[in-house]
Amino acid sequence: MYCRRFIDRPVSRREMLARCANGFGGLALTALLRDPAYGALLGEAEAAPEGAAAAASPAVSYAMAKPHFPARAKSVIFLYMDGGPSHMDTFDPKPRLDREHGQPIKMKVQPTQFNDVGNVLKSPWPFKKHGQSGIPVSSLFPNVARHVDELAIIRSMVSNFSEHTNANYFLHTGSLGSECHDLPGFVVLNGGLIPPGGLDCFGNGFLPASYQGSIFKPGTQAVANIAPPDASSQDPSKRDLLRTLDRGVLARLGQHDSLESAIGNYELAYRMQAAVPDLMDLSGESRATLDLYGIDDPYPPTQIYARQCLIARRLVERGVRFIELTCPNVGGDRWDQHGDLKGGHERNAKAVDWPIAGLLEDLKSRGLLESTLVFWGGEFGRTPMAQGSNGRDHNPFGFTVWLAGGGIKGGTIHGATDDYGYHAVENKVEIHDLHATMLHLLGIDHKRLTYRFGGRDMRLTDVHGELVTGILA
Image (cartoon, rainbow, N blue to C red; front, side, top):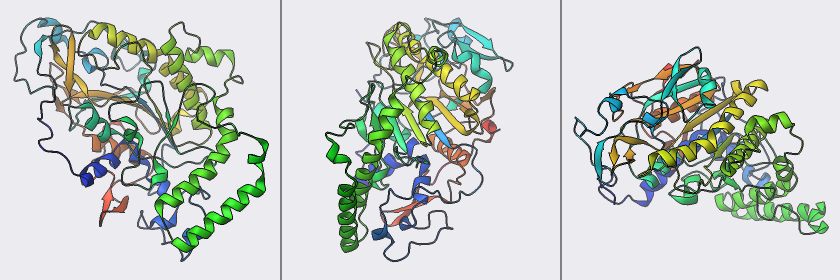
C-alpha cells in the first residue's frame, strides 16, 4: 500500500516525460552534441545547414562536439542495486541501533511505504575499518572493502520518492553517446531482473528516440536476431539501396525523429552483427582475469554478475559511454527486504561483491579507472526501525551511494545521516546534485546544457542541482 505522502495527485503526461528524462541515464545528453541538427545545445554549436537532416543518417557521425571544459570521465558504469540496499547495513554504521535494538525508536517516524513500523533493528553484520582511509564497511562486502580507498561514499543522499517506480524513473532514463561506431551508446546488461517501472526506466523520455537504452541479455545471443539469417543479408548492394531510399524519404519529409531513429537503428543493427558476438565472447580473456571477476564461482548469481562486470569493462574499452548493470535473480526479492533482511541482503551481496571488486581492480590495472566513472547505488535506502520483526521499509530521507574513478576523490566520506541513519543531516545531496556532479565530470556544465521540449529549453537537472565538490579530486 502506498502512503501517498510524496505524490498527492496523478502526474500529467508532460510531467512524467520530464521526470523520465531528468534521470541518471540522461546525464549524457552529450550524445546530442554531435548532431548539429538538434540545435546549439552548448550555446556554441552552429545550427545545421539547410538539408543537413537529409544529407546523412543520424547514426553516421560519431564525432563529439567540444565540451564546456576538459572531461575527467569518458564512460560511466552504473552498478544499479535494484530495490534499495540498506545503508546502515553496508556503508553507514550506526552504533545507536545496537544500543537500542528491540526498543521503540525515539524520534518522530514519517509515514512509510507499508506503515508496518516495528522497533529499532540493529545491523546483523559487523563493520570493520579498511584501507589507509579507515572507512568502515560491513562484512557483507569483504571484497569491495579492499578497494575502499578508491571510493567516495556519499552518506547523505535523499530522494523525492518512497515508491520504487517513481524513484526509478527519477534515477534513470536517457543515454550517453558513443565513441564506438558499432555498438549503442547506452547499453543495459540485463542480469535477469527488470526494475519496477519496467523498460521505461531505460527509455529516452523527452529526448530523441535513438537515445534509449539497448538491453543485452546474458549469454552469447545477447541481442535477438543478431546472427544474419543468410549470406544475402550481407550483400553491400542491398544496404546501399536501403540507404538511398531512406535518404530520399528524409529529403521529402524533412527532419522526423522517429524515422531518423529507425534508420539509424537499422544501420547500427547491421554493424552490431559483428560487434556483439565478439563483445560477448570471453574466450580470449585469461584465466587470471576470469578468476578475478569470479566467473566460475559456485553461486550462479555471482557467475551472472561477474560476466556482466567483465563485459562492462570490454564495453568501456570499445568506447561505449554508458553501461548499466541490473541485478541477477537470487531466488528471492531484489535488495527490497521488507522481511528476512539477513537472508535477502546476504544473497544479493554475495552475487555482486566479488565481481564489483574484480571490476575495480581490472579497470585500475588497465589504466581505465581514471577515465571511467563507476557508480553504485539504489533508488533509496531502508528504515532503521524494523518492518514487522526482521525487515526494513523504504527510506528516501537518507541513504548511501558511492562513486569511484573518473575524477572522484577516493577514500572520502561525504555527508552524514542522524544517529539512527534515518535522515540526512549533513551536506544533504539531492538526486539532481548527483547528476550535476556527474555531468561536470563528463565535461558538461549542467546549467548550460538544454534540450528544446514542450516550448521551453529543458535542463536534465530541471531548475535544480549543485556540484558535490567534496567528492571531486
